[in-house]
Length: 420
Image 1 (cartoon, one colour):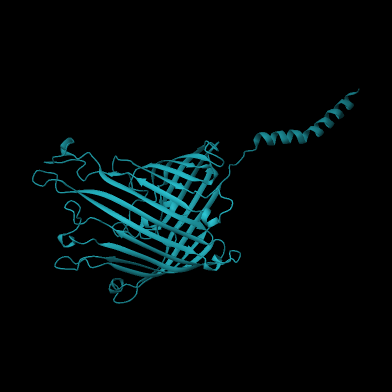
Image 2 (cartoon, rainbow, N blue to C red; image 1 turned 90 degrees about the vertical axis):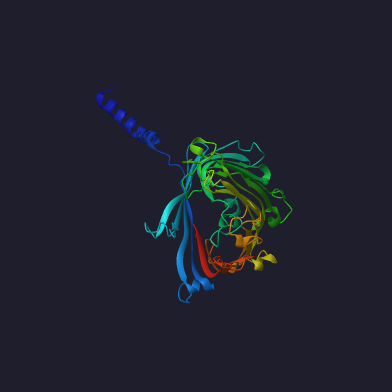
C-alpha cells in the first residue's frame, strides 16, 4: 500500500468519525437547565366610601380611589434531588402615616422565601409525602382558607381581625395523607409575622389537621368529596413591656426584668367545600392575649390583663346557573360573607377590662358583611362588584370624655383579579 492510499484511508475514517466526535463533545459540554416556574396574582379595586364619617372628612363628598391592592409574583425552582425553593414577592402600597414620609407609593417585600425537601413518598399511602420547609413560610391556617375564599375581595376573617399574619419566619412540616384523606401542617415561627423583624426570644408552635373524609369516594358528588374539616391551634408568647428591666423595677430577672412571656394563644375550627359550582366555609376561632400595665415598681405594681376575643364567620361564593345544570357553564357568581368578632368577650372581669370604666357592663363587638356578584371575563380574569360594611354593636353611648361612638364603615367596590 503506497503513502497516497494510507492518507486517503485516514481522511475517509476522519470524515466518517466526525459526527460521532461532535456528538461526544456536545454530550460533554451540554448543561441541563433546571425547570423554572414563574406565576403570579394581581388584584386591585375602585372604592367609593358611603359612611357619614368618611364623608364628613371630605366636606360631605364621597371619598373614592383606585388602587392596586396586591401583586404576588412567585418563583419556583428545583434545588437538587427532592429539593426546591420558592420566593413570592408582595407588592403593596405604604399607607402607614408614621412611615409614608419615606415613600408613599407601592413597595416590594418578600412574603414567602423558603427551601423545602420532599421525602417519604407513598409511605403514608398512595399519593402521600412529607415535606420540610425553612425560611419565610405559610402560617398555620390562613393560606389554607384562601383555597376556599377569594383573597382579592378581602382578607380571611382570621387575618382581618388580627389573629396573626399569613406568613412568618420559621420552620414547617407538611404531611400529605394517602388516598386523598387530607394533610397535616405544623410550624414553629417567630410570631410577629413577615412584615416585622423578630421582637423577642419566644417562638410560637402551631398545627392544623385538614381532614377530607370523602376524598377517596368514587360515587359521591365532587362537592361532597371536597368537604374539609380543619381544627387548628396556635400557642404563642410575647415579651413583657418590662423584659429589659430598669431602675426600681421588681421583676424576677436581672435589673427587675420580667423574663416570662405573655400569653398569645389562638385556636379554631374551619370547615368548607370547594368546587367550581360553590365555595363555602364556616369557622369559629378564639384568641387570648395577655398584656401588662403599671410601672413594675413597688409604687406602681405590674398588672397583667387578659382579654379573650371570639370570631364566627361564614361565606359562600357560588354559580347559581350551574347548581341545577352542571353542564351549563356560567361566568357569574354570587358572593356573601358575614363575620362577627367580639374583641373582648369578658370586659367586665376585673383583670380583663381593656377600656375605660364606661365600657364596664358592655360587650362591644363588630359585624362585617360582604354582598356582591362577580364575572369571569376569561379563565384567568375576574371582575366583582360588591358592598362591604362593618358596624360595631353593644358599644356604650358616648358620655363625657368617652367619645367613642359605635363605629361604622361602608363602601362600594369594583374589584378585579388576574392570575398568570
